[in-house]
Length: 239
Image 1: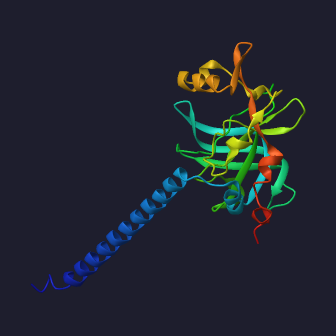
Image 2 (image 1 turned 180 degrees about the vertical axis):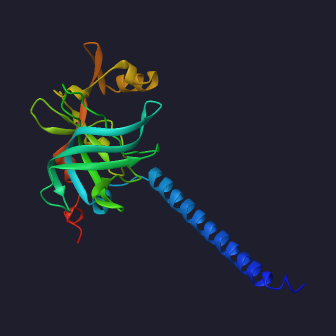
Image 3 (image 1 turned 90 degrees about the vertical axis):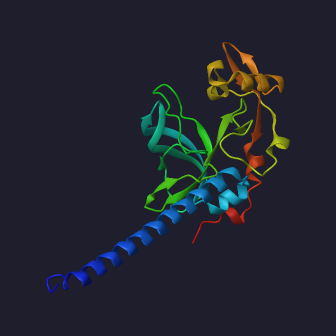
C-alpha cells in the first residue's frame, strides 16, 4: 500500500491533463467546423462588387503570367499563380507589378488560374484579393470567389465575360450585358469545353455562335460600366 501512495497524485494529474487535452481538442474541432460552415455559407451567398471590394486589399485588372501548381487527377490542388497588374483600383502595397496568389484545396469558387503557353498572352481578370494572413507578401481569394474574366473587344475596350462566371453577384449585370465583337482569342471556346446542356442553352440565347471549328462568345459587360457599381469608399486603401 505504501508503494502505491506516491502514484495517486501522478495519476490524478494525468487524468486532469488528459481531460484538458480532450476539451481543447473539442474546442478546436468545433472552431474548425464553425469556420468551415461560415466559408460554405459565404460560397452560397450572392455578393455585390462593392461588398467584395470593401473586404479586399487589392482590386485590379490583372493578367496571368505563370502558375506553379500541384495537380491532383488533372486538377490544381495547391500552389501559386503569378499575375501582372495592368490597372490598379485599390492597393495596399503601391508599386507592385507582379503579384503571387496562393490557393489550396478543391472547393467551390477556388482561386486557380489557367497557365498560358509560351505562344499566348495570359487571360485577363478583374480581381479581388486579400492579404494572406500567414504571409502578407502573398494574396489569397475569398470564399465567394476572386476573379471575373475579361475579354478585349475590337475597339480594344475591356468587357466582362458574359454569362458571368466565378462569382455569384448580387449586382444585376444581366441588365448591363450588350453584344460585342471580341478580338480576344479567349472568347473562343471548343465544343469539348462545354457540356451539351450548356452549349445548347448558350446557343439558344444567342450568347455564343459557331465560329470556325469552335464557338465564340457574343456578349459582355462594359468594364467601365461595371466599375461604376463599386463605390469610391470601397476602393479606399485599408489603414
